[in-house]
Each structure stands twice: as C-alpha cells, then as structure tokens.
Length: 174
Image (cartoon, rainbow, N blue to C red; front, side, top):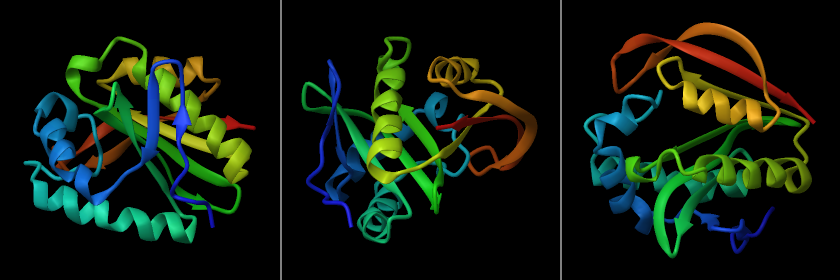
C-alpha cells in the first residue's frame, strides 16, 4: 500500500492526497456550473455533504489501490483536483478539474503531468485512458500535449446535465 504522506511537486504546484476537510473547497469549486457541466459524475447542485461523502471514500480507494486522488494546491490554496482511478492491474483513468479563475494558465497540464509520472513510475500503470466533454477542447489539447492519442468520439452520461453528452476518449500507452 502506498503511503498517504506522498506529495507530488511541480514548479508551481503541490499535489497531496485529498482529505475529508477538502469537502468545503470542493463544493465551492463545483458550485460553478462552468466547472461542473464538464464533469461526468459530479452531483449538481454541488453540496458540501455530497463532497464530504465522496472525500470519505478516497482513503479506502487509496488503501485498496483502486484510485489515487489528489488536491492540487497553489501557494497552499486548493485550486482543483487530479486523480487516477478505475485502476485495474496496469491500467487506469486520469481526470482533473480546476476552479475557473485558474483555467488557461497551464495548471491542469502541470498537475496532470505530475500525476502521469506518479501513475507510471510509482503505481506501475502501462495504459492510461482519459476523456473529456466535447464542449471542452482545452482538456483534449492538454491530453495531446501529454502524449495521449485520440481513440474515439462517443457519448457518455453526464450526471450534472442529466443527459448523454458528446465525449472524446484518449489513450496513453507507457
């Protein structure tokens, strides 16, 4: 089992395992429809109770090795999350979301790159998938810069939109 004391650092960010105490900030970020409408499984409207329930699962997932979820901090302030989940053997799925004021500044790419390194070197993943709402091409551009290859255009159910939405899937082979 990997220690939850781990910290991933980049030139500007610190990624640390999420904690139940992050629920209020998570709810604050996801209360912005511009953020949440791009997510597949986020509750809408976002509540601190829903985020606390989700955060409570993170330690169990970490212990089981099925997901590693990180709070992304800039100068000690949580600006988003990045995670690798659905881990099965040597494959998993990467995801991330950020508070809107931090979009377009390279933070998602920086955090995702650190997470990819962790997933490959520490967790031992060989295949990583990722996807994004087709209305969010910036996320696709990040994935391409990280070496992901477009796999398919499909639809996925969006819990916040309560509808099937166009979705783009990517794959990275280590």
